[in-house]
Image (cartoon, rainbow, N blue to C red; front, side, top):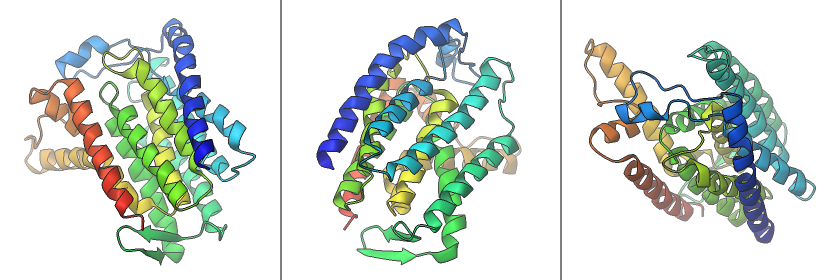
Length: 318
């Protein structure tokens, strides 16, 4: 499995790196340009019009890699389908924003409804397959806990929370891809250590992020859009649930968690104080920008924190 995971990583990197220079001009031609909010930091205004929906390229690469390895590793198929379906939800959102010029894209209830439907089918699959089951590993304890029927609302919370966290993290050039690359690498190693035959798709996601970063690091030539961020959030949540590691999302996905909490605190504080702000801007990566940090510094620091937390989480596997 180690060899196949490495091959999947390299293959998906190569496919993504090749697809991006083909797809980016096409996105330009179709006028799939990023809309920048008026409230965004001033330095982001110049990014308006940069091609978005770049997630299409790395999702395609992940699907191609899945087709190659699915015969030997059938458990990667549910994760791949989950990535694809969440990517489609994100694509619909992006399409409405960029083509139909509906700035808000899908309405919140529409997006949540589609996420709930896809998540419900996936959770039912896990619940009905005892070889996966409703047990979760408790970090640093060497113990597991069987959640029984509580697993259903718990898993739904994990999926929706993680997906929103990844979506909020996609706000700076290379940030979401860099952080998720580290998270995917951790999950690949974890699956190998736990001998769960699913590691190649995590390797594929890590490779896809490396290939995509060639075009997404500052100054970005393409943005992943909700197409990419929702797909990546779907990967993190579904892979963690398939490997009984949802609690490990807390340390390895610490950046996702902090991004979500910063938005919740900002909104809550704004309402409670009738107009005052806790942070200069939320999600929190924009706060650091407005504090004088360069975009590249924020990305580097957030990625380093993720790598350190992934190493710490590795020690909690046994």
